[in-house]
Length: 332
Image (tube, rainbow, N blue to C red; front, side, top):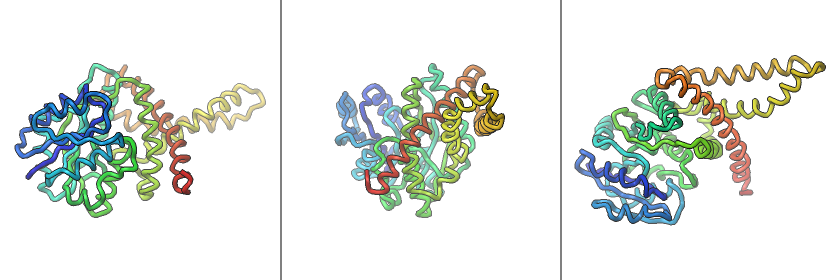
């Protein structure tokens, strides 16, 4: 059974060579490799074209969802396997994905390993992903596009990735939900592993998280039945924590002023303290799972990252409510 490995790539000259080498080294014999250059301004296309056995497609910069669909349209494989240009799949990656399709599912996904463990933020991000994936059973309701394979027919039947997602920001959730709504089953296998360059700089990471918060508004507008509980990767505590963090940040000056004032009502700081307690409790489950994976210094750093990440997502959420609320009314 032919498997088409499709890699969207934008300005990926630094990481793409290792990705392509790993894809070419797969121990599964029947593959084709397709790189979709998403309007790169560096040597991404030249590197892909110089790699034996790699088919290169080019498009103007339109984002990874469009690039993945572009690759799918020309792919010859019965199975479409996706990874990212900053990932390095293990040699048995495709073999494990293909084996899982024997159970009759429409999509199979795997997990991450870490390439840049020297960076504290990267270690924290990897530990959180690993902790969340450790809770997965075999059948799941979400698979990430960094490590996933789809049967081409059901993929095409639901229209592939939603191309209005301009960034990597929820288009894989959207596709997973569409496949399930069409009665498709999704499978997770921890044996299919790709290494990944996780973010190393906090500012860039928070910018990405704000974008996720923004586009989650579109995701749950399009799939309102998922808005209350999220999915198995990010459940209701993850949905509640960002807006609550924004309320806490905005209310902190009022609570402090009320506490310091002799005329202030004690009810205000008490109410604020109650919200703060609820916010802390929302993070207890993930903190407990991370304790076995991180040193104490990394765990404390992780707690700080979670807090500022929630605030970044909340600011993105506010932007998304304006952006997609206006779109819904035809004004954007």
